[in-house]
Image (tube, rainbow, N blue to C red; front, side):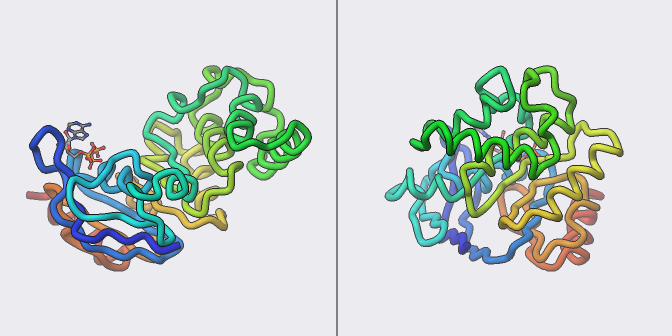
Length: 226
Ligand SMILES: Nc1ncnc2c1ncn2[C@@H]1O[C@H](COP(=O)(O)OP(=O)(O)OP(=O)(O)O)[C@@H](O)[C@H]1O
């Protein structure tokens, strides 16, 4: 899916968080890196319309995130930095079903789709578990299942391996690598994006590098060193 930023900026209360951004993303695997506060999450939130551009436009699959807000948002799934906060219902299978119910699916279809997505991510055994009792890795998988069950074309993950132990980090990295959906990952875990198609580096609200992973990571290391 084409993601297009046209002179998009974001100001929060008069303070610029994102400098004018002109960018067309078409790749399947896109990484986003940068120091804390460099504008990565702001840029990602523009894609699903959670943040609106102060000036300029953002389109996803040709849909404007302001003018075609609802349709545009349906194209993108978002896993936030703390995915337990985005789980609305107390039981995992109910949380997954919730998104489908909201989209008007019938009971039988909801049950089938919920079962299928749990199986897809190898978490059928967690169906009846309380979401707040899941481990970090289980929570991340549960959130991915909850979001992908509604069929977005793009999945955005904000620091998906943050706070995971080595075993769960590997599990989540493999899961992301195996997704057929287009993926955009914000991360400080540089190994996670080594095999990606394209990596963007943000610094002080500006896109400062945009290249293959090795070169982008080199730029990021230079920025971080000063
Ligand atoms: N809702 C908001 N209101 C006001 N300022 C905000 C808001 N969200 C972000 N900012 C500010 O905008 C700037 C960019 O923040 P953003 O969250 O996009 O950075 P980031 O690169 O994702 O950071 P991190 O790696 O710490 O998550 C920061 O200075 C931040 O304090």
